[in-house]
Image 1 (cartoon, helix red, strand yellow):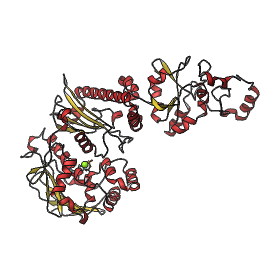
Image 2 (tube, helix red, strand yellow; image 1 turned 120 degrees about the horizontal axis):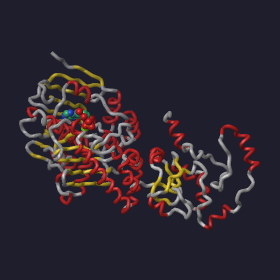
Image 3 (cartoon, helix red, strand yellow; image 1 turned 120 degrees about the vertical axis):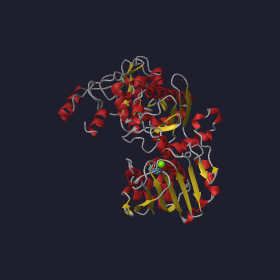
Image 4 (tube, helix red, strand yellow; image 1 turned 135 degrees about the vertical axis):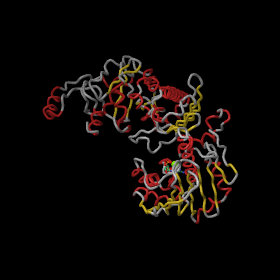
Length: 541
Ligand code: ADP
Ligand code: MG
């Protein structure tokens, strides 16, 4: 006979729970959104599993049921449930990369804990914001054994055998003294309306269904208010911000699909995680199939949140097979193009708003220049760059339009720090002539520049490499007099410098690119750019 066992939380979970339980947050009510969202995920998973094994489906419809008795609040679902191994694996550890960094951020920024917690996706643990004990009674679909997981959130949890009539999970919160409000029906009703109106399953309190329980994306855009979009976005992405952009698009034709996608107005915490996970959920005819599939949305659009639903994909095949379905590749192509065209609209019509987006996600989007050669031109079109020519960001087209007579290249300087770049002595000669230089400060810039050598027939040219020929360019007349001295006889000086520096430099030569600084370092024409060299060295190459 199995008995009650006690386990310690993984260190990170322990730390996290201390932070979560030890502080008071203004909108801790989001714990309910997180638990309802887990219940909804569990129903989604069982509905998917039942496609291949109908016997797993619950006899009555899927539902999430809330119950309260003044001291406790419980959230029940008839979804997939958990077995002993699942409980150990999921409710005791955090299987997410970047956990350490996240906890540091959380410690530093206690005030915004719920926001961070949500974005990090440690939803379940948010229960300890309002409860001093949490019980999880659960039984996995297709299995007979049921289990009771229990914890006071202070370092350890227990698991013991239990009984549960049907598959599913009941999470019971023993509410803290100062959290009894969450046992009040009116309060619960309000929270569900606010945060969970459009999840796909009914949320019930007694006999009353609290939410609309319809897939929002199936409605016509004209019937959906901005608030409804925002609520859906927040639920789908565990976020608190207002989406920067909402794209609700239905494609009808040989391949039907609907997408409801959002661009956040803040950077998600895992944006630069090496896994580069996508966060768009794939549905087939309203049945959830999977999240995090790169086959649906390319990695360079991983900041997108939302859903894509198609009735034309085959439901009863495995997730793996579905991911290799050419139809999915086609949907991916159409979705990607749609998103890029919406970016283009924004960039043209609202350049300032677009600059904010660009600040958050430009570095990610530019990865597509290397990864998606077929869409390179469309991506370049929506790229924006800092420039010496103006305070505002510029498009490449804008830069080319402003090129000086005789200028045959798009000049850029690349480095890590945008502020330092703008001060670089390399720029002096260009500034004096009024020739614009792009200031590229994202590491990814060096990589796409290896692949894309020109725009509209104009080559990209680093001003820290080779002899930039400023003589042929007709500069701004009033500034041109800085050149009037021509080449003074520097040969003696140069010989002396060469003797001093010896082997450490390849050559020393006079240059017109400087007006204020005496010297600057440049790479040879055929060599790699100074900044790229530095980057590669850092990555040990
Ligand atoms: P996330 O939902 O982002 O995975 P959570 O902390 O909310 O993170 O939940 C952790 C995991 O616990 C889930 O991924 C799931 O495997 C499991 N889980 C939580 N609640 C339920 C539930 N009601 N039914 C089944 N599994 C659940
Ligand atoms: Mg969750």
